[in-house]
Amino acid sequence: GENVEQHPSTLSVQEGDSAVIKCTYSDSASNYFPWYKQELGKRPQLIIDIRSNVGEKKDQRIAVTLNKTAKHFSLHITETQPEDSAVYFCAASWYTGNQFYFGTGTSLTVIP
Amino acid sequence: EAGVAQSPRYKIIEKRQSVAFWCNPISGHATLYWYQQILGQGPKLLIQFQNNGVVDDSQLPKDRFSAERLKGVDSTLKIQPAKLEDSAVYLCASSLGRSATNEKLFFGSGTQLSVL
Image (cartoon, rainbow over all chains, first blue to last red):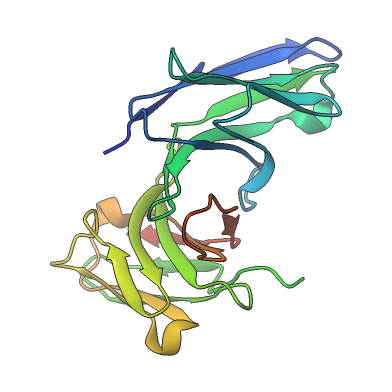
């Protein structure tokens, strides 16, 4: 099965700085890569996703990049704000069966 | 649109007791998932249903865990008997379930289980 690794496990940044979280996957058949944000005690919420036919996708302060050759993808948050503090999970999926495999999570703290 | 509904929100039981969780997916979503999320870890798939059929239950500890999705809508997950290591958040999720396309996964708020 698929194996998704995520780094770093914890990340602290000053407000206004950028944050980058990286994930690697093992199965070259994976073709869909969502990112979820989970605030303390709340459900994981989809914040951005990318499909394998695209190299980069942006949504305001959030962007995701994908390198299919190297089998890694990254989440970039620019101009971080305290409300960005949460745990972020990456995941990999392929459409056959629509199964999702999650990384271990990154706890992001934005220091005001 | 209404989200994925789960109950109860919290449950505290003693080891060897049994417990059941309930999930109602987003209306029209054919695929339903149960995930176990242990503190500090990512969600781990326990079982995946497509309508009322099981797609994947390879990581479900079948000696103590069971799940059903009668009529292809609501689902229940049961643990009997519970062990200390079952303490976790149990997340239900759903997706549309169309084949040959990647689909977004929507999560419920989860049930936080504490086994004492």
